[in-house]
Image (tube, rainbow, N blue to C red; front, side):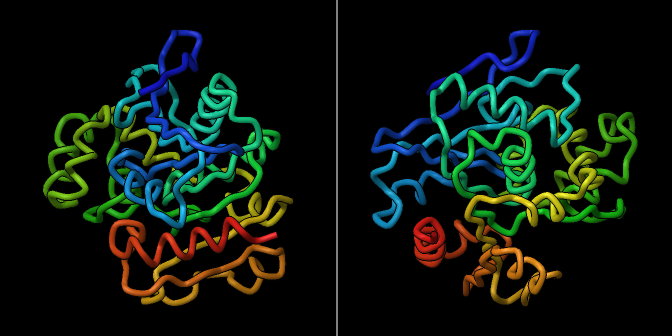
Length: 256
């Protein structure tokens, strides 16, 4: 376990680090998740092992601190990740990022391009989502006010998301979880999709084959983003089909 101070209030981001060759590889998790739980098996998979790998938890999540005053915008998450990577001395790293982590990774690459050499986005959020009461994930959480969520909404979300997701979501600070969800649903300006189209590093977008091609695939591919289906999985591609994910990620990392 490693850590770095990333705010003026001395809040720390923490990560599990696996030794290996440079350049470094960084794994970023989704909303209410934690990188070691979601990516440890992938980082150790024969197709991906051997590289220095940082399995990093965002502020408010997993092993990292849970500051109440932190804004938890996508930009704030990206900037604190940048400070952690700078402290870790990763240089330009390969970033593999799932769901909300993918949105943060796009913002990270746009705001701190010297820290990202390529992106592998795993069913990442690219567009704003309207708040939708009664649903799981960011749009459902964003349908509450912060006061409602802290008073009762977190318990309703607990019952809605199921035992597997809650096993890591329960580790998140409730304020951090709520604000992260709200800002993920609201997105960025320009949107994550628009930022992604303008990035110059090699980019790949992995998605569950059963969901069909994501919206805007033609524009993504025209901008040089490889859009890659992975069979036999849902949103948690790396957990549902570890072999398929490792193959697709390794091929994405080898792209010019």
